[in-house]
Length: 222
Image (cartoon, rainbow, N blue to C red; front, side, top):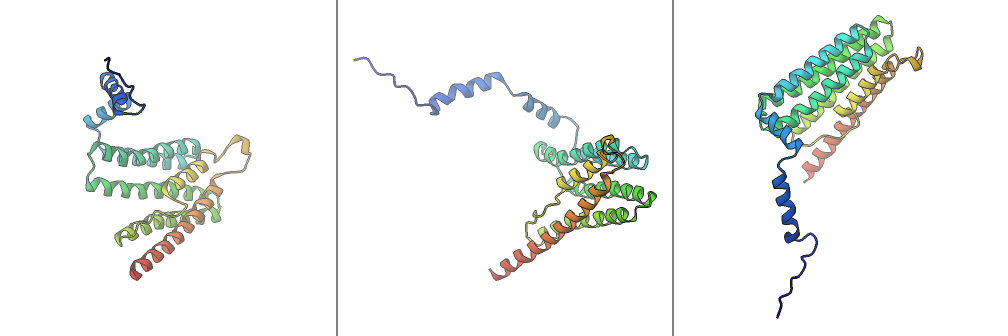
């Protein structure tokens, strides 16, 4: 009798094997090639962190020069570098304990340096309310980071709140890029952005304090 040749169902190992073979024959993808080249290169996470720091310094200098749009672009690119260094560290395996410490330290410095330049601009314009809000934004942004670090030292995960680092970057970058938009006439977006940043950071600090208090109470009860 002739033997039957049953058709393997879709999704079975028999039908998936040729696909894996074809992928192996095709070789690595472009993304994998770029990743492998970066890992094999001399590029380190610390170099990326320092590049981001240099770009934020440039952003502060551009603010003093009243070149707000260019300052916003430099701030955005520098902040993107800050997000890439951690991912590259995990992907390449080149990360170190000191590199993680340096990354967190530079993040706080970068945000503070740019806001100092913004506060100096408001002071030169005689805008005391905006200058005071900038100081509040610096303080509350530092508190957002500090509350998370202190909570994690106590064994409590603390990522709650509205004003996370990406949100703060977006708010401040929007204020810089559109600080003097031609379509906005004499209305400046930078001051409202600073007010928003200070308010969100203050609210996030309160949210994290309440979160840690609740978590520690539950842990104590347990």
